[in-house]
Image (cartoon, rainbow, N blue to C red):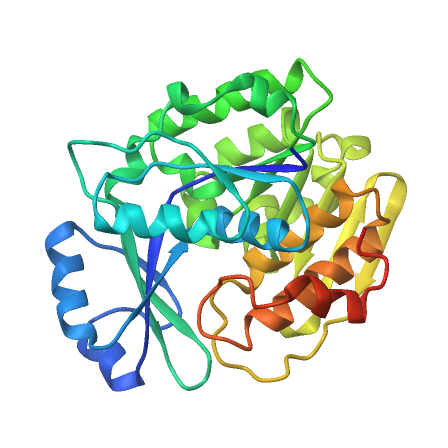
Length: 329
């Protein structure tokens, strides 16, 4: 494969709402709050009309990469229930190989209520459910070793079992020419597991894709360059997004590319903008494109995702990206 993703398999349940509803639900606007199953069911009962899509940060990235033409796969855990079927059908519809066995007992499929306000901001209440059952036995090391890049979701650091899973991925990659990429997920996740992520960046991770707040939480006063292979870290590439201001790509040997943003045709929902960037960027580098071109692909993909409700690949994404970036591979 070009890109293999490992992460929390979550069904996004999207609804458009207003600030008063966010307040009534007692969720911090623009943030992600973990909820238990009872809280999740209560939130969904109050949500009104919703749309279901396969979700989870890395699942979104992998779907984007596949839509752009990458040979892509995903590993994540769902339950054998209605939402699990919804996730499976959704991610496969984008051309992603998804073969992880579903749970037949235990917690139900994870879901995230995504409340989208008129300013395009998204507020999330997430029930992790079945995705926390992902373990080392779900990893095919030959599949990892045979993939150009394996993208790991930072949220996996929240459980010890998932950390063991990450370890198995790293072992498989170390025995091959496969690269390991890490998506930092969110700044609070980085703060919870900063030392663990620092250890990974110093010894095991080849590529980091994250937003500026997440990277700042990781490096502190040390600077982004401290993550790079020629500055004491292990990374060959660190791609940092700056929202509507574009992105910066850092590489070994002082390489630095400033990527201009592509303004969205319409701002509907910022859900998945960073995920789309990561998917587009990894599609670019696994197809042998220069870093600045890969960054441009990520930027253009993100601009099309925020012009719709939800993080799914927009219709005809490959053709849309090719209009802005002819060298899409």
